[in-house]
Length: 116
Image 1 (spheres, rainbow, N blue to C red):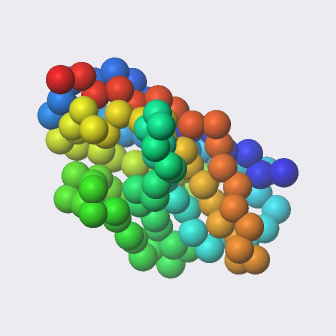
Image 2 (image 1 turned 120 degrees about the horizontal axis):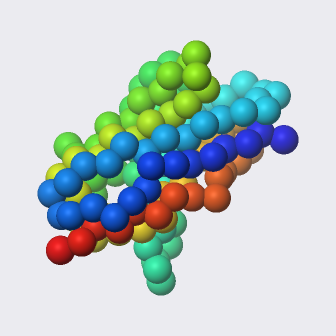
């Protein structure tokens, strides 16, 4: 079973930056997409950024221009660089992978709290 472990979440002042990491192991299938989602208390989980196996990226409007997704194939790690953070970015951030068969696997999340 694939394992995804997120890290890098922290308390940060508004305007600050964080880099989240997602270490992926036990991969037994081909991955189509790597994704970062977030979920704030009382809200639905939403897609923040996606990078395909070909390197094509997608960003949600809410964070476009402030976030960059990337991956290091040698380390089996996906990153989410977040800049100019706002209090409304406060959420638990989750890493997911989607297999070529359409199955999704996610981690337990990492907490990001942006202080005013």
